[in-house]
Image (cartoon, rainbow, N blue to C red; front, side, top):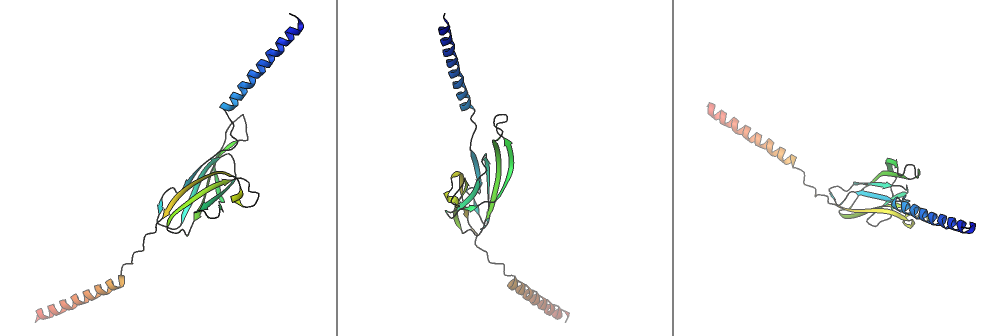
Length: 187
């Protein structure tokens, strides 16, 4: 074998090994992807009937991107949800990418003066909104539910005054009757 042939065989072998190693690294990346953005959201109330016109909206989010949260009630203007707390936070890929966390958040707000009937509510996780209007931002995730407000009719209060007057009158009549009875009996 001459030097040129040996060099060509070594070069081709190195190229083949590099290609095989590259394929293995790509397959490893596909088998263990590092998520860049994910969100799982649960919202309450869920398909429930309430007998009051004020309820609490609660939601739980598992995410790796902390963004802005808003709610929309019956298609009205989006309202911000400011009451958000971190429930837990854990490193997703220790040793691989120390900047990706799984964060569980809890948020909520009070919905008051709700009219009777069915209502639809959606909680949105919205990215940047350069126009200053959240409805123009990128919706990262959302969760929707519906609930019903059914306030029972008021019952008339128990008529205490007429009952008290009737009771007093009954006692008086019975008392007078007993007096008359015992007077006649003595004579």
